Amino acid sequence: MGAPFATWWNVGPGRGVPPVAPRWQGGGVTTASPVTLDDVLRAREVLDDLLHLTPVEGSEAFSEIAGHPLMLKCEHLQRTGSFKVRGALVRLARLSDEERRRGVVAASAGNHAQGVAWAARRLGIDAVVHMPADAAIPKVEATRSYGARVVLGGDRVEDALARATAEAEAEGRTFIHPYDHVDVVAGQGTVGLEILEQVPDVGTILVPTGGGGLVAGIAAAVPAHVRVVAVQAERAAAYPASLASGVPTTVATGRTMADGIAVARPGDVPFGVLAAHGAQALTVSEDDLSRAVLSLAERAKQVVEPAGAAGIAAVIAHRGETLDGLAEPGRKVVVVLSGGNVDPIVLRKVFRHGMAAAGRYLHLRCNLSDRPGSLVGLLEAIAQVHADVVTIGHVRTGAGLGVDETAVDVEVVTKGSRHSTEVLEHVRESGYDAVVR
Image (cartoon, rainbow, N blue to C red; front, side, top):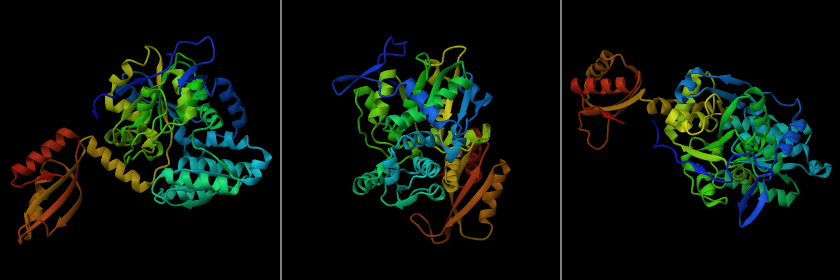
């Protein structure tokens, strides 16, 4: 099961069909929703045939877990590997001739960077993209391959944003925000239009959420009876506090494998849309995210980055509980897989983390007598319960070790939680002081 049952946050006038444009209360002023269905429809005209119509795939495995018919909107198969190119293309296409001449600048950990770079090349616009110093190498190289000049520096996306806005002011470039602009939100909303056409009986849409551009665009695009749910990593979840307070709120964030949705404050434009439409939000843990990435690869044959798998993480974490109060009988749940740009090294770590969270990966440490044959006995004990040893490491000096002892770390793949318990018990019964690491 993951973390305790997610906290739900609701705001706005509900999802009944409004007689006029939706309105929201923010900063003491009531305003209309910043992005409407008409905005999204016009954005689709801009995109035309430039991008892929990403597929929607059914999944018996995840439908069974959810307790409702469930479909996967495979936006990780979009050009550049994520939905971000939609908003970037709409934003850049609407620049004036003078703005195009001066060029654009953006900041991103990866997906927005690639979207801006691809769109800029398509439209013949010079682009500079600021990225954190530790940005994933595949994302950096992909951004460069699309023709943008990449500037690395700083530890956080916020550092890159500060440098990008400073360059925009100094050089007259147009800053392309990753989520807080009406054109960007409208562009992302075209995902919602496609879902309506591909799954006419959709009732609930689960959307990975950082700043909120994608989930807000979808909320603006779909009719009032379709419930839109923002899913955030619990270590970087700004929307619960923001929706509870009624205004965009900055929260402290921790390190999360879902770096693509690690945003400390919702965008004003996305928050306005979500508040107007009465959207809901929930959070998922790191274990939930890693299990989702692993499950998508194993059960749906889809390679998705942790941020892009947040919707499935919610389904796996709470199974039918999460959707019981949302999904209407006879209507489908659609989970957006928002991105697939993941570093292979990171993917390996996430898979291992996911296997551990699912009880299928066991890391044991045993103190052995440092003499020939000691390790053989331990490995035989593990083999007797049909577990698969994948790595072995030795620690010959350290606290608690005698001069004639060595600590052995053994990483074992098992068939699940029960098998892991069986392995541990058998190793201990065989005379080894095994400790789970």
